[in-house]
Length: 301
Image (cartoon, rainbow, N blue to C red; front, side, top):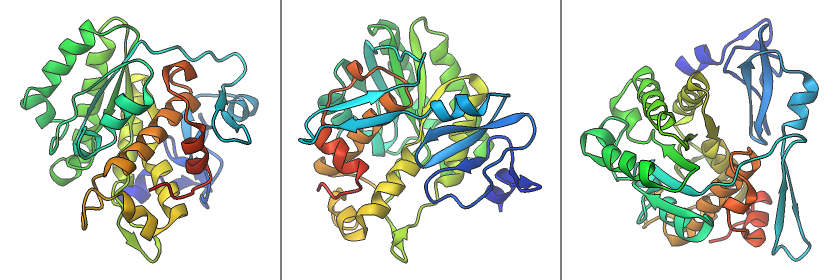
């Protein structure tokens, strides 16, 4: 019900911050007055306050071209848009981002082409990541890191168990604003990685409402975000339940990732950062074979 209210429509139009397009979307594609439908990725477009023209929206979509061998990839950005090259990445998040059970370690070691440090901590929320001291360590690292330093922030899995959605959004905004207060530091919110539970042959996930609040936090403070939840759901639906579970950390654990699964979603994060565009391709190692299979929704593990 909360989701329906948030994404409600007026006379067949999506509300501000509501979804207005994307692969498989059957809802309204027009936005209420004062907002415009802006492309985020193939799975999601959102009504953003403002009066951008249709041309601007259309050309905001990035494209990816693969060679026939699948060993190189070229990502183009909209005309007039220059994505900066990152000097470093720093990661914050819960267990789905950690080195041992999430995509973060694989991102730093296999995907990032620049300095990368992962502070993700299993079991944490946007509150306990601070109370346990992880945030203060991250802030110190961000201040010392080569600039520009892009701080990827992904929470939600544990927050949804103990916090209200408004508390979650406020906490993310506070995190983002603190990062923005450091010269040369750039916060980038990442919507939660999908769990791999299935029902009726499709992913069954309870994180979509929390995804919306992550986007809202980014928009309120003028930060970037990438759409990992919807992109990972689309990929998992494409490869199917059997292949999806081959990425499980262990039998029965459809939340965390084994090494192969970590590589898949780390690559997905890297590609999303380039395609948004948040950073230039030079910030991310090229792996056209993996990117091509993800785009084609082919099983890798």
